[in-house]
Length: 239
Ligand SMILES: Nc1ncnc2c1ncn2[C@@H]1O[C@H](COP(=O)(O)OP(=O)(O)OP(=O)(O)O)[C@@H](O)[C@H]1O
Ligand SMILES: [Mg+2]
Image (cartoon, rainbow, N blue to C red; front, side, top):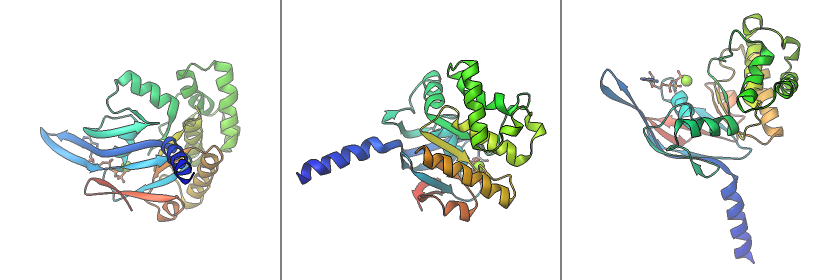
């Protein structure tokens, strides 16, 4: 009986892992010379888990996030998303997985400046084939969830930094992804606004049981994660 239970627990645990990264390597070529930034190590990310990625500037945090977020290709190692190896996929296949399963909040919020807040949030849904009227309704709901629906028709240049960042959070949530990757999501905000945007992000991620991997230099924010990982001399490790 205990054996069966253990096996069930193990099975559950296995399916719980939404992202599994092993021996990750990224070498840039700089002036004809190899520049190793990621040199090994890895991590698992379970459904609903909140993990902080910390480390000094230039240690490779954004590089790691870009690789596991399928925006860049690692030089070596493996990345599994829901058990599927994605590191060897073609660009087209990776785009499909990224659109379906991953929401990305960039280090700089990266909203499209010629489009309104509403249109920015609609964009990932339209890319996934959602009809325009449905996308608009859902985008407005998301803007409401991050308290910026009163600025839905504003261009990014007509919004405050905090409002833009909250719009970027809404955009990352648009396709209801299993995994949110956030690169210093509140890095450009003052402490009060940073805390408010971060609270919102955590609240939504917890409610929806999404996994969140976020980069931060703020130890107070890192302390609110379930656990921390870091990059030391290129190796991705538990902290
Ligand atoms: N495309 C590239 N070509 C060459 N070197 C790069 C490239 N992208 C990043 N690097 C280098 O890789 C290193 C890690 O960069 P990365 O942006 O991942 O650091 P980071 O840990 O996110 O730093 P920060 O905390 O300042 O955002 C840096 O030294 C950077 O110059
Ligand atoms: Mg960075």
